[in-house]
Image (tube, rainbow, N blue to C red; front, side, top):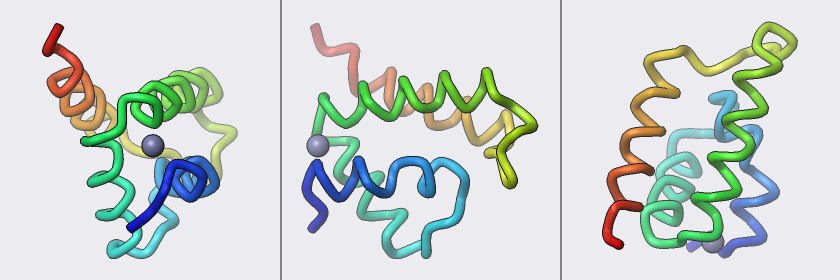
Length: 78
Ligand SMILES: [Zn+2]
């Protein structure tokens, strides 16, 4: 299992699709359960969107939408 520190370390690679799928899944799993990391990833996502083409391998818009809605969804409990 990844802890918050691991997720933070891997966040940008996760978002740029550079992680092995196994690690990727672990990050997603952690994000579903950890509000702090969700917030952090959302902030990075926002940044990545702003930077756009400067990323060597930016996530597609569809990917970002999917993450955003998944994260939003699990955030709507209060
Ligand atoms: Zn966490």
